[in-house]
Length: 442
Image (tube, rainbow, N blue to C red; front, side, top):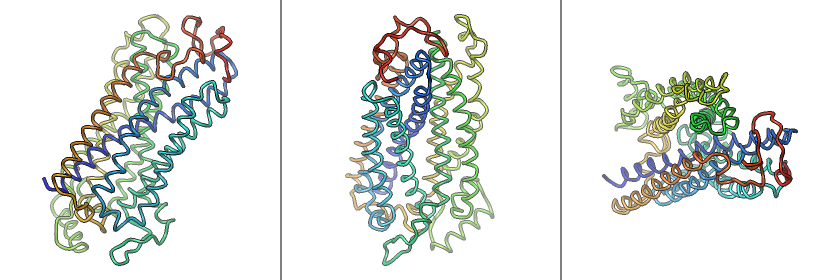
């Protein structure tokens, strides 16, 4: 493999692993923010305490994923300088500002808000504390938006002109309203909701099958299933709209994803050669398979994601969840499919753009830095090993804290909600005698 192939493979591996962190993080922070808002608006102390336990539990899982995801994100920043200096030299005037804003939002504002929130339980007034988690959520989505501004420009370059081989911005409004950006943002919003919902449903079903904290996890199983179903529908609709737009600004990708052959494919090839000169301007054919797999999984999730919510109807006796084994095990089967669909979606969008770094303007070969194959291989091995270890550690920690339950989590603190020994019942609307120190500002 030459340096170009190694650079492409390195970015593909690191970006894929990083985006899996990001997708779960975006979904979970939305769940936590909504749950905490609902908690502080609750007048009944027992019900408020129950809902804050949910904030603690899901928030702890979110913090683990965020912390390790931040580390994986640093490798993306390094790679722009190490491997893709051609992009900076030619398109730096366009992509530099959005990436700088994203860095400020992600690594400064978002991290600051999260630190204040994580260590502010019982120390910050309830409404201010809820505002902090909303600050985390909004800056997380702002960070995603600015990344997609850059990615949308690379997919469909608008609002610029070339002068002596360098791009200059002529219309920031066109860049910020780029259809290739906004369709993708909506698609991602649906995908992260889907993933967070599947994760909530899988964790909740795990405990319900064992009759643990039934009143705690019964509502979250329903909430997760509904969230996953809605997210699947949004992602499917946005993805379908996004696909139809490709025919105009990325006809080579559209032809490949749609599996066109014969005269139609020859027509697309001829049009590309007329625009860009002789050469192979078609993306690899295998990316069409990734797109089909994403589509099949999407249909399966749209149809099945809602089903686990029906498992809680009329369950009042011990062991009743275990008797509904198929529906209770379904979330554990669907969760990996959600991750696979996200990877396939990333491949369809990025590999489908090849051989371009910026469609029609800058090829991957022109964008890659002048790095020796040996140096590229060394950085590829190091980054891959580091991110793989982070992914394994992340999954081990999340699995461990998810299995421990709500009172043993990362953010667990018996002084901020009723201790297990002091609780008589923790369910929606139940009357519970709370110790004085359990109330605090909540």
